[in-house]
Image 1 (cartoon, rainbow, N blue to C red):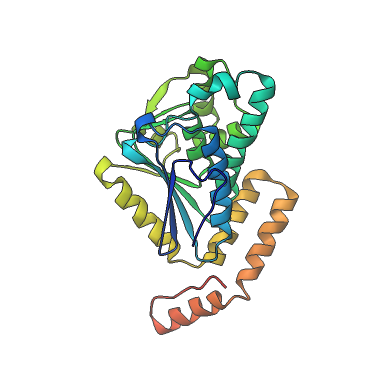
Image 2: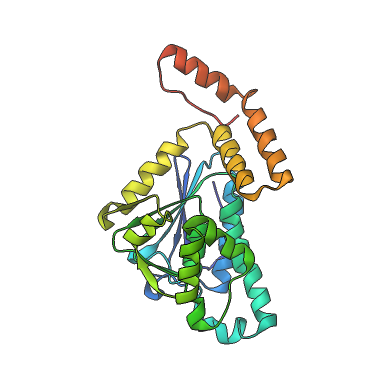
Length: 266
């Protein structure tokens, strides 16, 4: 799989192996703060990955021990200085959040160190989240005097629950990984030296299963959360397609023959 993003020079790395596409935010000297160009790049890359038949899982992580400090505030005086410029900026970061939220394949955020602001938003938009024990989480909008759009805040409410979402947004306080785990924001917490290994384990487990089944399940869960009739219809269609797939035949055959199935995604 080869990918070409919008910015080209944006510091994001892509590694694809055995159906797992690992997307790494690569500005360790800036705690992986996300520039406007990176928001555009992320949206483009994730949409492209989701269209690749070989891609079965997307893992998002950060270089240098931190997930992301969020949007690069150093740019805000120019590109997020007022309502007009903020609207353009929010179209870019909302597109990145939407790319992770709406990817047809599962997305997993592997979170170490700082996960603040827009980084928290990317994690919230992902399907699954694991973190190292040293991870810290914050939604610092109230300290900056800005607000998040509805769609982005919806991800946080779904991922962390209404009360924790309110606490984070109102207080701008940072919480630790144990607190995020209790709130349901995290699937699990591991030692920092096991974060990459554990993320890979989960991703490989997902990648080995039937892709059409997983896509149908993701669509059904999305429909259950949204309640949108269009989403419900899409989920029903995705589920029905699995029964005519060669993967369903392979799953039955593997069960009968007491062997591990080999799924092709068709």
